[in-house]
Length: 246
Image (cartoon, rainbow, N blue to C red; front, side, top):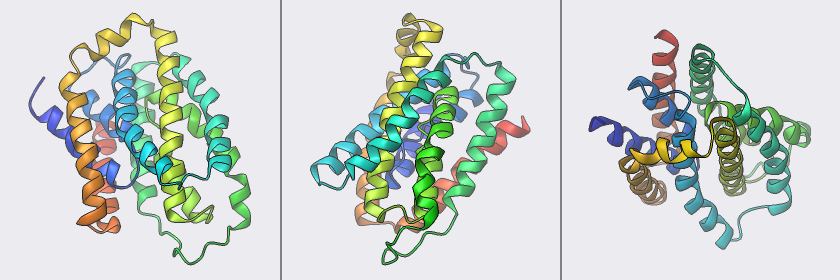
C-alpha cells in the first residue's frame, strides 16, 4: 500500500465529514486507481463510510436535530434496495462506469445552489423525496456508497427541512444504507471476504477516523461550508473523471 492512499482517504474523510457525508464514492475511486479487487472494494468503502458517519449521527442524535419520523422513512425505504444492490452481480467494466458517472454526478450535485435557511416552507416536490430514496439505496449498495451525496442536494432544492435537519437526515441515511449495502455485499461474496477486504485496510480505517474528526472541527471553526463543498465537489469530479477516461 503506497503512502498516498491513506493520505487520500484522510483528505476524503476530512472534506466529506465537513459537509455531512461519508465519502464512500471517492474511497471506491481511490481503491480502483491503485488496482484494488473491485469485488472487495465496496466492502472497504462501506466500512469506511460507517466509521465516518457513525460519529456524526450520534452527535446529531444527542443534539436532538434528527427529524426521526421523516428521516427513518427515507432511510428504511432505501435500505432494502441497498441490500439488493449489494447482492447484484456486476462486471468490472460496468462497475467502473457506474461508479465514475456517480462521482461526476455527485460532484455536480454539490455545486447546486441551496435555498436560504429562512426559506423553510417545503416545495410541493418535497413530498416525493421518499420515492427518490429507493433508487439511491440501490445505487448505494451496488457500488459501495451511502447515497447521501445525491439525497442532500435534492432535500435542499425542495426545502425538505432546515439545513441542520437535512445534514442529520443525510448522515442517518448514509449509515443505514451503508450497513444494509455491506450486508448485501457479504451475502454475495461470502462473509469470509470481510476479513480479506479489511485485513490490509487498517491504515485506511485509521485515516478516515482521524480525517472525519478533523473535518467536523474544520466545519465548525474555520472554513465556510461553501468553500468545503466546492473543494469536495472538485475532488469528487476529478476522481470520477479519472475513472471514466481510463
